[in-house]
Amino acid sequence: MIRTWSASLEGRLVLRLSALLLAIVVIGLATGVITSYQTAAKLADDALAEQMVGEFFGKAAWLFPLIVSIVVLVIVWTVRSSLKPLRVASQQAAAITPDAIHVRLAGHDLPAELRPLVTAINSALDRLSSGFEAQRRFTADAAHELRTPLAILTAGLESLPKSDGIARLQLDAERMNRLVEQLLRVARLDAQPIDLAREIDLNAVASEVVERLAPLATSAGRSLAFEPAKAPALVRGDRDALGDAIRNLVENAIVHSPRGEEVLIQVDPNCSVSVIDRGPGVPDDLKNQVFERFWRSREQRSSGVGAGLGLSIVAEIARTHGGRVTVTDVPGGGANFALSLPSLTVRLP
Image (cartoon, rainbow, N blue to C red):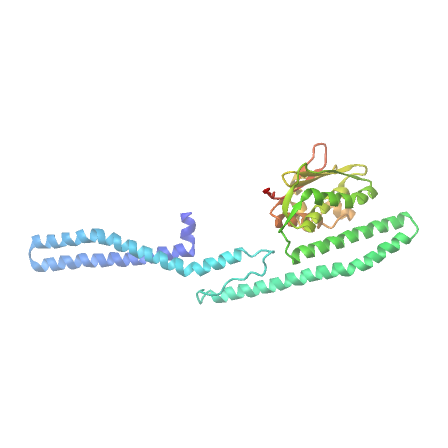
């Protein structure tokens, strides 16, 4: 820690100024000693000279450490107060995240030498913010523009005579619709803050998701099983966002489960929702990568399944709610995706 401080700008200034002023004090002390000897020598009285020199050293014995201490304290205070605006700017820069891209560094009370640097950093942040906003608008606009032609395409395919070719086209159209919906969810997450003020029962949210996705699972040759918590699993958050997170986990499980298998959705009283499938599972070296945006496994890229957005949406919603999402192995094969959220303690009147 001392080595780190001595390598900092504050440490270097304090050490160098202290060394400089200490040298000045030592030179002053040496000058005083020499002057005392010269004065005593002029008196031609050895006893009186020794007395004067002794008195000088007696006074300097306590005066010298006092002066050095005062000088060091003044140096430390001066340097720290002078660098305080720089520390404040550093803290502001550290607080800039994708969720707070509009934060800018304060330019007041800064030394004149640092103002051009802060101005340049704020200008760069403005350009980055404009780029993020343009990207978000493009994603949202493109997804909105694709919804109508995809809906027309889906309806047209349903009216055609059934065949293997039409079935494959319907599957592709379904994937495109799912991708568009996920892009819209990503745009909403990036553009609008999530309302975390409401009390939500995870039992109710998960039950709605299971009811809504049961036909999708049946058409895909899978089934859904739901085990709610015996008591309300209350959290504080956004109902629609949490529903999106659970829905993405269930849709992911349906896609990766073999035909004829069951996907189990469990709600724990400790405010976690587990989605358990009997698919191939997730290798240990990929358990963190699966939550990255647009990441897909080699099998997914070759088969065209998924777009790598669903699990990243879940991770973002969990982070915004102060929770996390994890994946673990299931005995006998499969994966357990668990969305864990801070529990809301309710005090009864």
